[in-house]
Length: 360
Image (cartoon, rainbow, N blue to C red; front, side, top):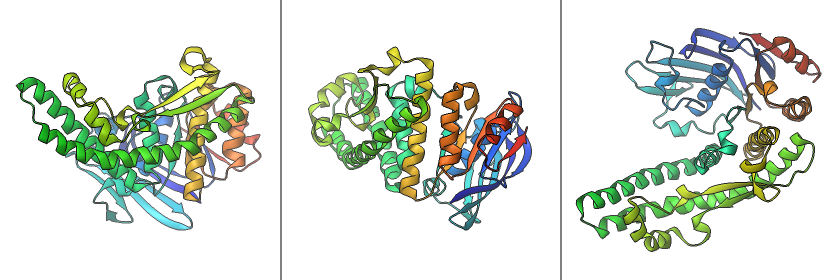
């Protein structure tokens, strides 16, 4: 089992200082917009994954007028106690500390405390470009495979170098094939590893998404997800060589795992073209709950589940199906938010399970 027992926030977003103690598995946060409900969920996410779910830079999570913050949490995993601290100092230095020991690499923390954030407004996962879905998939796999994250960092580093070199060729008019050969070799091992892991993961994950979508929607609606990658056609080594002239003209790397896509269809048509708002929201929740299920299966215990503002985004039937699955059928810790305290308490009371509600 995985539990967050307490958390304290110092100069994190709208919190100058606040401490919370959690004595139940199901925890609700309620209050008006701007009270800090989503920020609190984001702090929990940061504690688990060393980064904000929303902010692109760490300093963007600091309180107004501040350049740093501190998040500290007490967690229990499989009956073992942990103290985790995330610090962004005023100097810009970032520190992640577990049981009084600093990590030499933040990636070492990833996966120790798996977490799933379900934010309804994050509809770009469904309606946005392929980059959004690649990032989502990479975050899941990185929580269960430390080597995956290492290879991903290496691939992206070399990709930037290769793209920079291609632009340099165009600006200088000079072409050095030997340098490209070196960079191609450095891309092949991490690229092939990432492709292999994505392919294996998505075979299981796609099945789970279909099941969760039907559970939330209450019926089968012809949903289909298809993994597409250039590496399905040939090895990365050959693809880079075959497309070299094309890359030189384009001044960027046109093939590789950075071009992978998870295509989503509904009734054999692109989902974004025909799906209703309810169907889009249902798919978003299905993708996140499938993430939860896969992480639980691999880790052997359920991850922490963060449900932000779900009451505003789903109809009563879909809301009931989601809450029943999240809180009754699973025994992991759940944090959820709502702007209406009475509605939140009423929904949780119907589950007939112990819960606590914190008013912000």
